[in-house]
Length: 242
Image 1 (cartoon, one colour):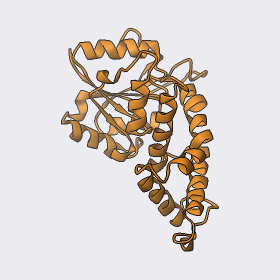
Image 2 (tube, helix red, strand yellow; image 1 turned 90 degrees about the horizontal axis):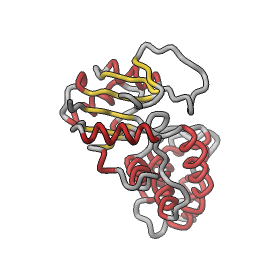
Image 3 (tube, helix red, strand yellow; image 1 turned 135 degrees about the vertical axis):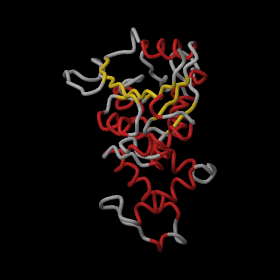
Image 4 (cartoon, helix red, strand yellow; image 1 turned 180 degrees about the vertical axis):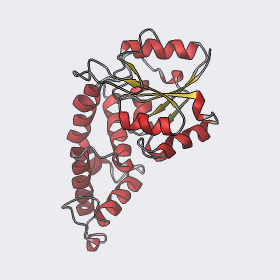
């Protein structure tokens, strides 16, 4: 029977460790050089830097100041201001759209250089294939940018598996902890919320999705979580047998 699936990436079909120990450190290590080396000839960077500087100007980067007199004096000074803010947000694990967009660009370079492969749990890959073959529509909703999502699936250890997915959503649709975001997704894909099942490891996300009318399943992998937990939602530790 076909159905509509909405799935998170980190902690659900991919590991927390891959994101925290591979992707994040790679972006953090390369963020400065990537911006300084590519700013003049990478148009995708222009709006990202502009938004970061606006956030700094509005006081959304603690301890980092914005000096508007630098605008016509030295662009590099602005770039270093943006770099400081981006590194701070990474350390604080902020889910800020321009940061996620920039991480996607840096990871694209890493994938192209074969610095790493996108990690997908084997049971998740087999389940995704089975659901796709049965006619299910599978959507992704992750705090990582849509670009970063597609890169992970394009360069996975199983090859390019983007064809398994019908569509992708990131925080541009709204916060993952807000019920309105899941209502927006349901409207976007033209499926009633009650006919969508959302899989995630984060209780606040599951609560928001449930409030929006979606069916929810909590993924609590032994590889990612050592402690057991009682959940008010259906609880699984892998996709095997689903």
